[in-house]
Image 1: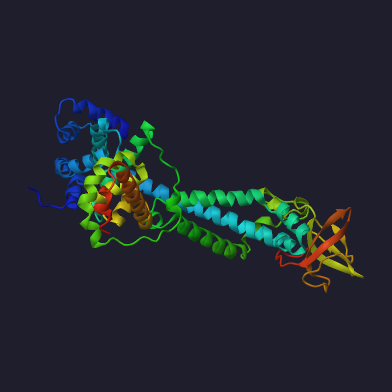
Image 2: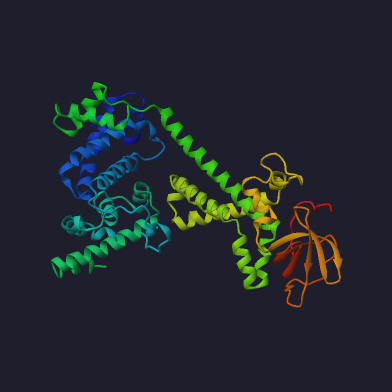
Length: 194
Length: 251
């Protein structure tokens, strides 16, 4: 078991130790695959797309700044690959400009009680994610499954923190409506806690 | 080798492996996957920085030129004469220049959104920061002799960029019903002015002429006049002083 941080391993790869890349692969394969399965609505080619994420990560590893965290860097590559995959499939509309990004939104900061219902929400999200628009699905996946904070999500999707907050808020509202339609009363158990 | 080619080669290797990790590492070991050199990313970052700087400087040039033209032609004064003045103002604005300023604001905004300091703030904030810097920088540059030197042409014309491109917007003929010049003679309530083309125009003042900033003009004053021109005579609809800074024309 290698105790080195991701950043140290990335530096080793940058310096020519290609074998060390396998450690990063081990650490991130499951995470990126989960991100892909939950974000992409066509899981048939997930393996190929995730593979391309790691190919791009290796090819571009020298663009990684060791002074920063490795995780947002590889998730950013994954985000770009997934968006390209969605565009290719033309199954979902990806807006060129989004008005959520235009204006500031007053969004409550992340609170401890948000973590309380995280497990329950994760369970509910699993069944409803594919019915949600991509712009709400992605921050929900990164927040509830990849356990990133608003700032990290913003760095992955290149969005202001307040926009991440508003998309999570709207995504949760959409989730509540979907659950209410499918299983009346069930959402109150989760959302009623607040 | 670009990413797509590397992906294709990698997919060939993948047929022999089992897990995703094995497949990727097989491609790495076989040499099909190669890291891009550091200079590639340095070059890309430098090109982005240079592109951003060029867009910012172009925007600064265009914005300061717009402010310079607006000041030197007295366009700003026209709306003070009511609806007729507003129409003259709208017709006389250098619209191509304005559209280019807007286009470069969009280009600059698109380029700076690649940087964390910009994408971390709402679009409207980064847009307002750009607009503020452009207006402040433009005002600063427009007060320097830069555009005056670029636009200052001898009466017979001069070498480029004399009155070329956007500087042609300083030409009196570009502005319908808008005339600016220096008073060379006060004749009763009328004035004789000389414009940038060294033409002498008689400004006829009537009881209907609007004088929102007063009427006490003297020889040497610079004025802007809105009114229909008939030969060398202009029936003034409105007259206002203005603060054009280019040197006076010697009659």
